Amino acid sequence: MNENILYNFLKNKPSFLDYDDELKLMDIMTKLPMSWLIKNKDEFICALDQLHDSHTIGSGFLYQEECDDIIFDNFCEWLKEVNNKTGIATLIYIKDLSSEGLDEFRKNLRKDENTDK
Image (tube, rainbow, N blue to C red; front, side, top):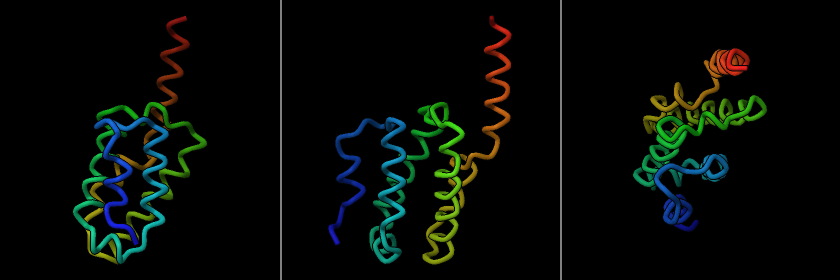
């Protein structure tokens, strides 16, 4: 399997990914075999860091619609599996990438939007 898969995807992207690129990156990651993740741990963690930063600091979460919550929740379940099968510390990313708390955020956002009118 081609090395540098994640690097090649990210090399011409900005530090903060577009939301669609966040989704593409998660799709690429979840299709990689666990053996690849172990062998290319540093590349995987760098890509995971960039995804995390894009989604939180870069505000990708603002573009996450309710229909996409399942994608992020499934990704977080996959991160748990990666942690358990490889020993790579992925659990630290789950809180910020899961959809937990977004319903409350969206409700408050809608309330604020209605108040401004």
